[in-house]
Length: 288
Image (cartoon, rainbow, N blue to C red; front, side, top):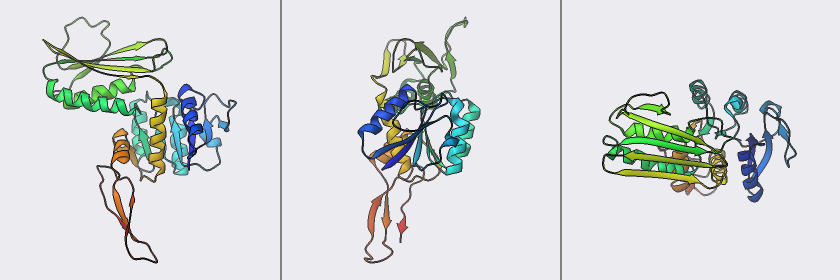
């Protein structure tokens, strides 16, 4: 049984996570946090994490950057892992997350969809082959309630492309007021806000004689909620302090590391159990 605390429980993503927890008996939604205060729910809702005095395994956050200080304080005080699925953090907040991850496990991703993270890898590989001969443009589309622009996922895609380019590109977010031809070493990002678009990201590699388009469209919010729940399971499995990403989650799902466990009494024959070790920190442990 994994006991979850849900930050931003009154929002759309909070309701999506709640629905998943209700359908899976091994998940328990213990309590919720929301800056707007209590709502009529099947679990207690607190305006601040500091008000919660019970027991839980992990916090899942789908709120806003303004909730970060209270969440980090709560996680550090209770040594509780955090899944940060919120976007729009500024550089100072990202540094605070890095600092906190030295003491507790923190999972942060701008997008918790497995499909999007496959798109990230495709963009990285395409940029490595074609980036020097193509203009790279990213178009992201979201619903009219989304607060930040460009989206965290668009920035993640831009970073993946930039890592593979032979130059350090400039990010150009919108071209209004720019009266010059496009520079080769830049990545353009355009944002669309309208209706109920869950999330749509398109990366264009525009060459002189051809156009390659890579695209991912989310058809429901459940894909992000499901990823957050998987991340919560991952941290609750007993990860050491550190900053984890979707790459770590995918590795944990597909290829967990093995450790050899020797019982302290009884049979002296070692037994095997699976526990994730980050690809950057591979290890085999013998326990008695």
